[in-house]
Length: 148
Image 1 (cartoon, rainbow, N blue to C red):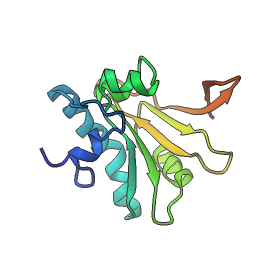
Image 2 (cartoon, rainbow, N blue to C red):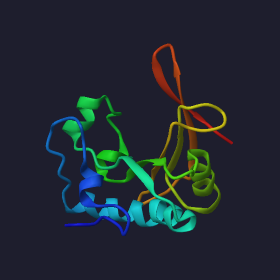
Image 3 (cartoon, one colour):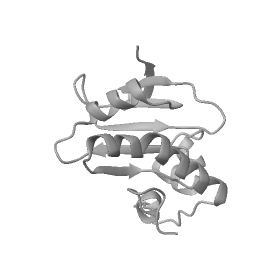
């Protein structure tokens, strides 16, 4: 398989620095194609600028090694973390997804009040909550707070 979407290669979607095999099954690949089609590609099409895929699919083993949540949608192929390139800002990506797309969770990942460090978005074939969150560190722990 070469592509998850017109803009995301299979290699990009499964790349990890954890040094562990990170191979999705067919159900996970279907979920990856869906979140790309519903959440990544529309942003890329609208702005016409490249967007870096920071993290997409994570096997349970990879997720555990990097300290990911045990309920991470990345392990189902339902979530993607993206980072703006080419003069685009992460806040612009975040606002576009929030205002124009359907999603399960959209997370302003750390950063400051003007720009997140990256944007997390998930999409489920079953049910989408359109939940908007902001991740923050408090006492060394990551917390997710609802945003209005």
